[in-house]
Figure 1 (cartoon, rainbow, N blue to C red):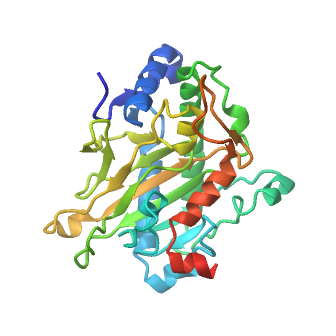
Figure 2 (tube, rainbow, N blue to C red):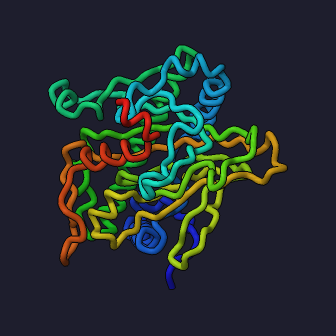
Length: 327
């Protein structure tokens, strides 16, 4: 039977080598049926997660003028601060979506740059990070979290390579000069009623290969559109991460794996301050020049592309149309 809810999968048998194929089979089923999974046994320090949340909260609690000092420099540059309602991720699927999302965010990219010539050729995917001066330890903590998520993403890609019938290290050569991003989203408690159709994050699929999400169990959370056509809540389980595959893995698998629509809904109107939510979102994106075309038999559904070209097109599509025209 097709999975209609998001499964919880323990990675420990893969990480210890005791039963790698059992984990790969479970991941394969989740990726085919619903495109989402919750992972335990991941090896990430709870203290590091807590410190990352704490520094993020301290940043988002700053006055707007202070946060704007590290504002994103251009709509096509995935770095820096984006204020409330400046972006609509649903616009990547529906160009007519107008209401901005009810969240603010801060983004960073690679904290360890590749060789200068490669980075220059891949601009703006290797644009410099914009680090706020407050809180003072944010750069140190987020850099450590970024590297930890990168290691976890590499483990997940090796599991997925086995799940697709390839050598465990098949994807390594495509992600060794990656363009991963860490984006922390802050969803404040509502200060006013939303506009018609406006929610915390509109329905969209993610653009890259996979996403690793650490979020909080607060009102107004993540929902996934399952194969039965229903929106279902993603379970928030202590000491786990939510993982979903993105458009690039769907293209690599010719849609045998699904890049699933998901959204973040508004909290109940009476939830108050308890509805503030914060999400640590790590986007694992391949090398900007990595070729993306079907890896499976049969007629390809999509024309060949590269990771960088695909991502750049969708970054632009999500922005406020006025901002894009001005850029």
